[in-house]
Length: 279
Image: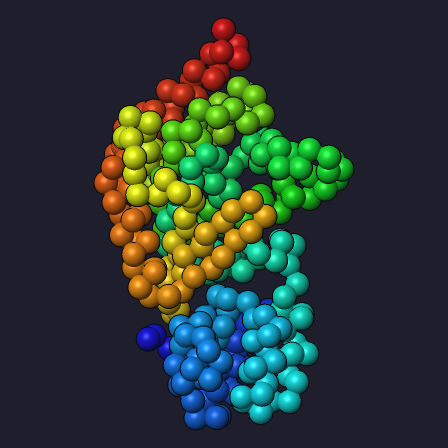
């Protein structure tokens, strides 16, 4: 396993906890795997805490203090590291997303967050909660657009998306919103910032029909997969599980349209929406 990267403790509370955990573990003479055994977690989980790609939870903080003899240091400080603008189930995934060197994602029914426009994000967010105050929707959309800043780097991370054709055909916010959303994806594709494939209806059954999937790779930490449902989400780092789901994603890309065919379809559907809006 690759060693944890050197962190700047002043960069964030999460980075501070990771650096302190590494220091305390090495002082105790334990490897990541040995500490993981004592906490009933994997060595890769400990590596992700140290690399600040995974958030420390209170129950883990309590066990760390017990095993490493650090008093209540981790318990006192994990609260500060846990603060996030995102729901708890999603916050860890967003933090890992920001540190990833490669993200591969399949979405069955909507455009993934990193590819959304503000208007599309607003339509989807409002559909999730039709009774929320407008200021709540404004904040949720702003938080989602903050994630999109990850695209500002022209090359990193590698972003590879497979969109189900249903995500292109399901109108969210109206035809003008969909035309803008699909043209945005086409623009990112033409600028070579993202790889996008479409899983067409004509492909029939495929490997990820049961739900969405996100695979994340890191420079100095083991890979993660993230599953998400309605109001819930889960990160998984079990090597066998990650390997299996990576194969599922690879088989998915083999069944999907090529990037060139996908771009042509996305642009054609965008044109249809635009024409129907302004015949």
